[in-house]
Image (cartoon, rainbow, N blue to C red; front, top):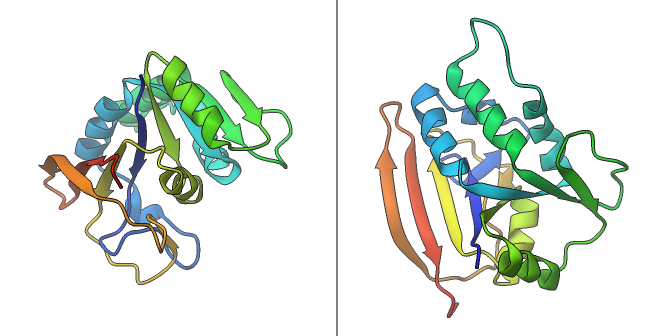
Length: 188
């Protein structure tokens, strides 16, 4: 059975965007981006809400030019090879390859995906991840904590959620970013 993984890049105070919706401070340097590429390589399907999909579709066309880091082009290739499912009532047809739109996110539907998938799944976007966490669907949480405090905005993790976690791995990077990988204990 495939795992459902919630990966996110929050500030030290666990916001994925500030109060103005900005997240430029979360842009990874080449070292962190290369690490992210290795984390994302085994993902077979990305699950997104509309807003996260609209942000991520940037990667449909690989960045080009001599000034573009190789890690960016590599990430675009990784992202392009994976399936994408967008949960949205308002999005029409998808504008990226290997993408389908589902009108409703259902726990049973995601359980079926986990049972039938050969490769792990990734859930992107704090709002959609909050629903999956509340339903007990998330198997792992991966945080790449950026050394910045933004003081408010959209939280990486929802209020009112209680889950026991087991630390599986940690990594430190020269720029101060820290990666923490946790298993979400099934007993809650």
